[in-house]
Length: 291
Image 1 (tube, helix red, strand yellow):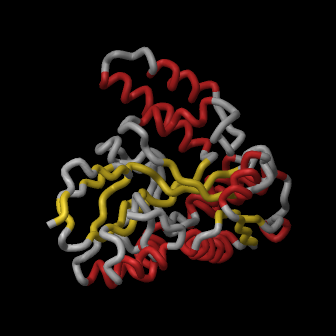
Image 2: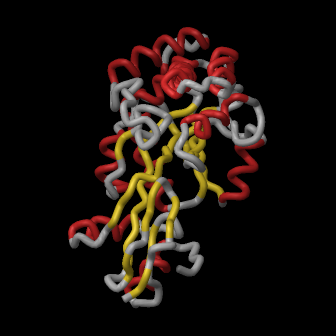
């Protein structure tokens, strides 16, 4: 399992028998290989416990307006993205916290809700002083360089144009440069993803308690912070879960982030490799053997 930056190189080495395991979480499979591997029954996929999402810069117009953020969120067809682009069994995300954390989670909004998106866009335009969507400036959607991120960004660019009438420019940078831009607030909409370090919603939500670190949205909320703080001293598991759900509800109502789909660990292993366990984005090798 060598460290390989290019998914195509990694998969080619796997096909040639040079590596025993290819894909997530130690690497990544190329999108083009996934349908055939799935058809042949060779692809393995497990929930990662994380969410692929976009982040809004809430300090810059027009995404300082919650209705505009919601309009852009509702105007995306997530089902089309996971079926036509990612194709590894990903599930559309209408919550921020993955269902591997809360198996009883209910969606906060409908996927591809164009009617509601248009209503919210109109409200947002009026609140910001735009006479119509024709006066709305072009939006820049940023992402770090990757074939997958590019394909998703292009699809969403088309959806926002078709469903909202908004022009979208795409911008990509290598990871280090990209993160620097997000940290400096030099973006409008950007691609990110979360993953669990422990299977607990607090670890996913805590980013948005403060205006620092990984909180590139420049958003926080006193009510959100109140529920998060209360959860740290609540010893009743049911009550603690409810406090964290209240916090997520505020996040989804204010919509500083835009959930797209829940991550899957898509991987392949040679038929002589046994008992590798992949779960919640981690790989466990202590039972693994070759025979």
